[in-house]
Image (spheres, rainbow, N blue to C red):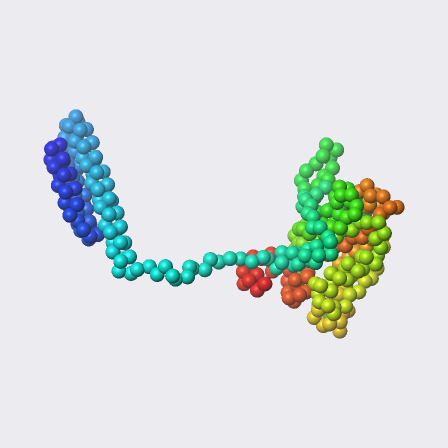
Amino acid sequence: MLNQLEELKLNALQELKDVNDIKGLGSWRVRYLGRKSNLTKVLRSLASLPLEERKVVGARANQVKVDLEEGLRQRERVLQEARLVVSAKEEPIDVTLPGRPFPIGHLHPITQTLYEICDIFVSMGFQVVEGPEVEWDYYNFEALNIPKEHPARDTMSTSWIDFETDSGESPMLLRTHTTSVTARIAETVPPPIRVVEPGRVYRYEASDATHTPMFYQIDGFVVDKGVTISELKGTLFEFARRFFGENRKVRFRCDYFPFVEPGVEMAIECLLCGGKGCRLCGNTGWIEILGAGMTHPQVLQRGGIDPEVYTSFAFGMGIDRLPMLRHQIDDTRLFYSSDLRFLRQF
Ligand SMILES: [Zn+2]
């Protein structure tokens, strides 16, 4: 029986060499590996053989089967390669055709706005700095004249980090404004200082058309000898002129922020109605853009800067609102929905 298997294998492989198409491979497979093939018959008859013989013949028959299957695969590969060569001759490849375009993205509208704002301030001599998004209570509040129980904390619903010190306090949070970076810069950089601090901030709030739990802000901080409120106005006026256009009217009014004294808010003439009054500006003709002021002496002192020698101004604004005003977008959630139909418009 072993001789019979050997002969079968030789015949089969010999015949395989003469097969020249896929169809021929199919009938070869049926003839030598199919259900009615001699090899299958041998394998089926194993049960009737004595145990010793069964072991030897069984092992040999299975090996023949493996060899035939491998032979079939090899022949298949050879035929496929040959066919590719033929088809390349019949249909030559035009190497001068342009490649398929590769889809590339572009910057998110908020990132574009952020870069544009940074460029404006960099051209006025500012440096761009960044700080941590997970922040200590100290830099986010205490250092900025917002001690515990201060009502200003209520206006910034805070996401606290689940972390306690030995004394049972939880002093870490997701920063609620980029002004926290101002507190860090005051502490580490010797004056003169001229920085803008862009980044993400977090509020513990539900989303709606004008709120998201995460959004972008940029803060500015200037410290030098003899800095006055006229430099503050000049800097922000120049920013508004470049960002919103030459003829856009700008208005400063008094406002309150714990870390400045005096504090101001800056508004621009409404982009939609040009000052006549509409729904966007609440019929006032003005849209508030940012808060600013002369940095409070205590904030400077905490950072180790002598307020008798140096004066300082600071400002902060939300980024997300600016492209909304510019493109008249009425829902801030669109920026974070990853909807390409929206994002591709910018
Ligand atoms: Zn308006």
